[in-house]
Length: 159
Image (cartoon, rainbow, N blue to C red; front, top):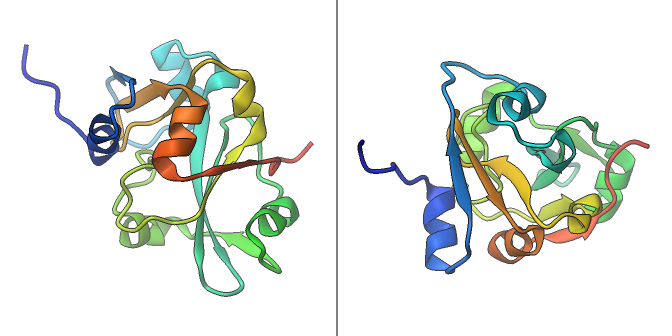
């Protein structure tokens, strides 16, 4: 068996000495987080997706929310001190983050953007996030993700 290919997200965790587990799965194209959870056997409620939003000021923000939830744009804007925010168009994801759709990790983007982790994550011992490549999931403690991504908790999903 070949050596595991590290992603930028894994390198960041390694250099910070943050424990994580990488889960590889077969996938040729984008699938949503719900399907990823099914394939990997990850509990859906502990599986999180990474969304990139842009504020009225043209600044970018990273939001990490449960895969089954939708972002509340008003709450998201408030969390980052913007008048309003909107989803980054799919065609711009790679140019802004360096990642492709479905492989966008909150760690290891081209630039470090302000990052918000949905506060519900704090109730779990571990959460599942993208490992930085389609076909790679990382599981780690939410507080470790907070530290590695210099993120903060906030409530930003629709209720």
